[in-house]
Image (tube, rainbow, N blue to C red; front, side):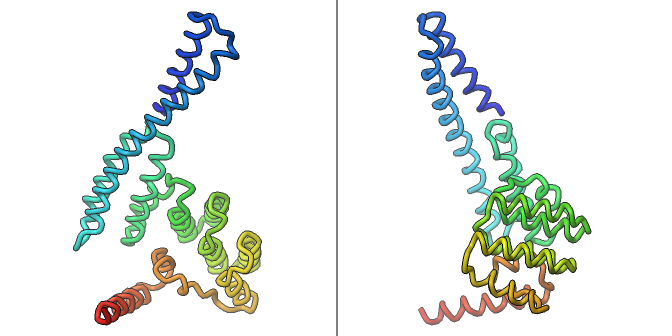
Length: 244
């Protein structure tokens, strides 16, 4: 990573100058070198992230246009990849965004390679990747992906429920109950986790539609159910507009 290398070299130069040119002992020169390293790293990080955010804002305008200019938005996001070598996690964050865009438009084949390289702290992208592995009959990879996502985002109730749902869909209801119990240890009293644990313990299907759009974005419902949900949401928006 260029930022780390440049900052490290700058800090080392200051340390060596203070030690050999100014005659300071190593313990005396080290704090100054560390300050220069931290300062350079911070400034370069700010500069790079500002450039990345500008590109992402431009892409967002295309994605939110009516109609959405999806391919143009993705191409814009791809231009930010050049900053990946400069700053840690930039490439992973961009891969997550692009993978999610493709996934939500049901272009699963194009979404998959981006989701595989997504930033592990983006739990939505990791959830989509876990589902992709499930659909490819790669249960071990699915479990590995969800476990990694939960380590980074243990307070996301939907993520625990999503993992359990995928396990239950694969016939592993016992493991699904274990996951829900683990989730309740992280989120004591969480109603949706409790309700789904009770449902699955009684041999019933988990209720995921209570999450609304957050659930439907994972495309685990039929196309007809998703379209019905979207129509109902639009109807609700119209009613709220009329009341105003």
